[in-house]
Length: 408
Image 1 (cartoon, rainbow, N blue to C red):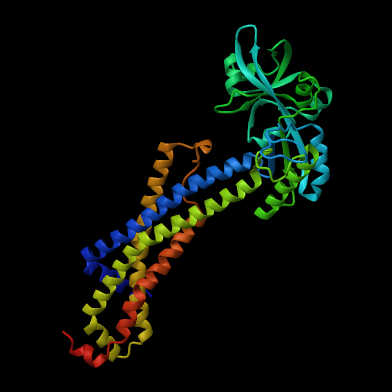
Image 2 (image 1 turned 90 degrees about the vertical axis):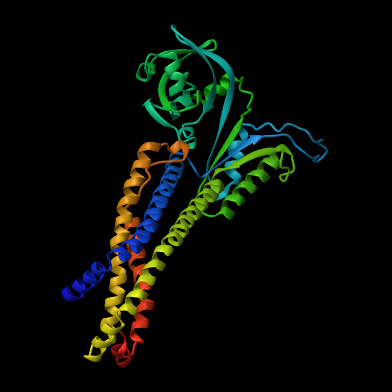
């Protein structure tokens, strides 16, 4: 084995320029593959982080305006969702519906402290709202079940709103805040880069609205669903149930507006998989140019060493040993320069990640290559190197010893 390695190294030394030029093509192909994989991983990581924070098994429903007559009703009728719809959707949802909640969106009001004020909208929500929108608490807590049950006048502020009204985010928790004509206690602050939203308990918002039973959004949390068909069936069931309650055609596209987050999540996941496959395909084709160069240099090497191969065959060298040497030479060139490409690609990806920054809300987070990708690329290198040397090696086996000994 040591003799074989020595022969391979000597062959590469004797053809430094040719080996280097061929190796650069391999290194460039691997470099581009690593950079593409690293950057696509940043996009996929951001997608997974956002989906992990936000509930992805939800269907949200807003009331709309009918676009066709139905059972004596004229078109153009407003569909107003009701609090009672929550129980009916849960009852008709079967084992596919885990829970149904709602939210009430208040009008724009002035929110003020002793020192400052700001204009904003409040939203009456259930405790599950925090996960549904993918928000994270910075300090304090979110709305809880006791707040809902006792209709407490508590409020949760976005970071932007808290910064506008208080000296610091931590100072906001426990303080009083005047919302319109009522006093609320701030119980928490959540992270939101752009929003100035504030949340109060659903029951409190309902009382402020006069307990008229109207809600603005219904939120259906699904369970036991795994395919787009399951998601579509759940959406169709919501349409049929609300259509029978509010007397509109369930196929009327304008009667209600539905955001099927579950099917959207599956579509985006499929898109991320396609992105990953596309990157691999582009990288492999880029690498292919280098592999063809390796194969060409091995054909030249076989031609130049025809006399040597003939002598080795004449003194009893087995075809297998010649085949092994040529293939290993090809694998060595590919692997050596391939790892140079891996190192450079990893370094460039790290630098780009540092310059661009980690912004999951902007679609980019933690770019780079992990151990599994490194193993995959290594496997690609070995296979590519073996294939690059296979055809020249087969050509070498066809050399007849007598003809090879006459070759000069």
